[in-house]
Image (cartoon, rainbow, N blue to C red; front, side, top):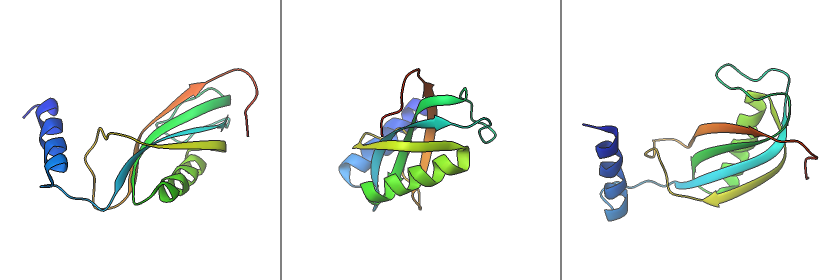
Length: 112
């Protein structure tokens, strides 16, 4: 089965109620500062950046808490966070989780 077929399969099941989850899907944008060394598997030049991630969580509050916790583990200091309900690109799991973490560095000041 192709990845596209798998994606269509679980998204259709989610839409028509055959796949249920207590979680909602969020996109999180966190503005902050990347430290000198990020955790293995992550890369961003040291300095100001936006960290984007997708999260399955029970609420926007939980998504924000998870983003703060994950950012600390990665080595990114958050100064501002924005949370949006969004379409998922990965199916829900048994527990809340985050995925698709990406960094976009920028010049200028970090807004708080």
